[in-house]
Image 1 (cartoon, rainbow, N blue to C red):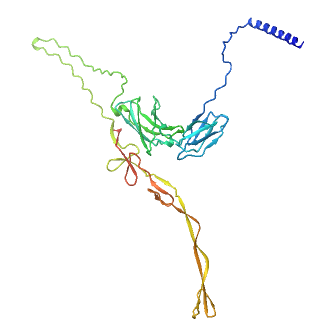
Image 2: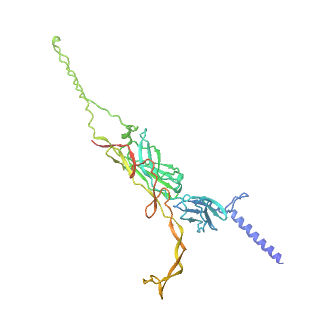
Image 3: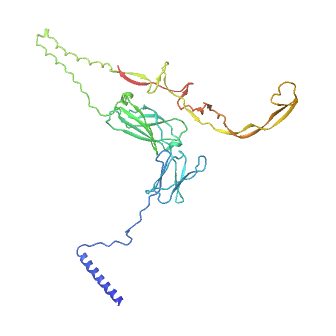
Amino acid sequence: MKRNALAALSGITLALAIGLTAIGSATTAYAAESPGTVVAAAQTAAKPSILASSPRGLTVTGVHGSSVTIVTRSGPGSTTPITKSPDKSGRVTFSNLIAGANYVVVHDGKIIGSGTPVNAVGSATDLVVRTTSKNNTVKLDWSHKATKTNGGAGVTYVITAKPASGSGKTVTAEMTGTTTRSSSAAKSSMLSGLDPDALYVFTITPKNSAGTGKSSVARMERSLADITGIKSTGATEPVVVVIEVEPAEKPVAVKPTEAKPATPAPAPAPAPGPASPSTRTIYVCPDAYTETGSGVCEKTSAYTYTSIGYTYHSEPNYVQVQIGTTERSHPFDGNACGWGTLYGNTCYEYTAVYETRQQGTNQVKDATPAGYTDTGSTWSKKDSMPAGYTDNGSAWVQTAAKVAKVVPA
């Protein structure tokens, strides 16, 4: 009976469904989807990413659940593992790491990659911009210390030429650096597409994954067209010069024997001579250079030094320890017994007996390392001379040729 009730209920439900379908089909028709149509899918988790986005730091993203461990590869400078748990967004940051060291990153018991933290990129210096054989192209030379610890070959240099007037097209380019052991490595690049008639402000800005360094800036005082003598190829309107000449006088009819030739037209006035120049060119030392009495442009740089703290080693500390006394005697001769005692007619004297024994150790400063001098507080050594400099005995010196400068006449 229960089964019959269920069957009846099913029939009612089926009838209602058929009725509803009939009503719906009278208003809107829907096309049937083909087999295999996706109706739901799990979201794919983002792959972990390892970023050296801050000085001496590594940030790992896309890691959820278990903690993340980093450790340097085996060899000098290796460290014990560092473990941290990610935040709710799946992000974890490690700080105060060894710049230039390669860290292996482990998550869920698997190596997911590696990263190399870097120091701040530092400053670019000594930017010099020179002309080339083309009036829209310049050569830029500058210095920047690019080492393994601040990104090395990963350092990028952003080159910008911006019109000094504030209007006009700004030209930019990027150059990838190279690793060097030099304390101030020279670098160069070409930049084209400039307006020959414009004055530019040039900047070189180093950057690495941890940020941007201080720029080196150079400003033009004359346009490329003026310096090179190669004028702009832009179209110009022709200049038309019109000279008016008075017509010749009509000859007067006279007797043939007294005929006079017509008065010739006056000659055009000679063209005016060139105007006196309003400027003149002199040759001066580049910025930051000073002219010596012999006419040489020099730039000096004070010596730099590397200092290291003292190191020490232990040595035994020896002291004299009294272990007893000795006794001696002699007949009293009427004089004082000295350190002894008089008993009757005999002097008895007692002398301490000592023994050398070790008591602890003393900390003794190590010998000064080769190439260093002892300043009284540290060991110090003068650094190697930068590239392009000479040593005059009191400072590092760099020389340069004079450059042209236009001044009022």
